[in-house]
Image 1 (cartoon, rainbow, N blue to C red):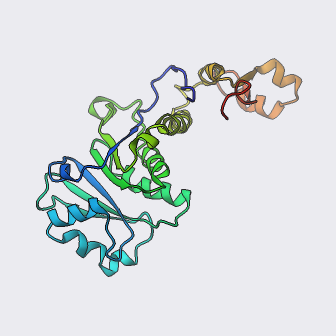
Image 2 (spheres, rainbow, N blue to C red):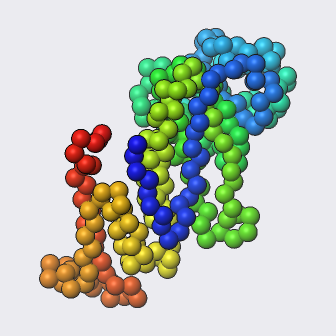
Image 3 (cartoon, helix red, strand yellow):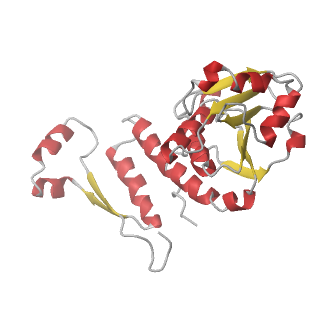
Length: 261
């Protein structure tokens, strides 16, 4: 199992981590929040989509058989709001292609994540082999930097991301890897988004040095080392700041011998 990024000075932006459950079509009528259907169009439906179509009295079939849906690209999204016969507030129908590559699968997931904040989302993924990349795309798109916002705007919106799949145990084994990738991306985005009066050169160095717990070798070059290396231009710019100039060199030479890459 991959390591977890150590605790930093500021709490990292919350991750909308996925969970994987068996597909139970009998729960769809009473499921709350948002339900996501992935469709190639052309009238083809899996059993989850067929149940949604019956509940909505054919509305789903009309959508996926429409010319507009047929012309859509993978990742394009359509909404059925407050669908009849269901408790859910929306059914999101996203175009996909079984032959799509991993990057396009993450784009499909991005369409889910774009509307997932503060929502309970159930994705009917069935046996799609792209499910891990779709989940990762949803997680990354749901990134919402709220540090330094006051009041309600600064509170995490909550919500949940659940994938109903044919083989949940196989996908549960990938949860840790997916979350680890998202943690790395969110950590980097948080560093980029933090204002310079909060993320000083010293606090930046402190946070990256903490990655040593994961096996990353971090060397901090302070002003004397930079001067010895002839980095005069960098030092000249740094003279306009109250924070001292620093350069960090990070090395990753792999994990322990025999460990998984």
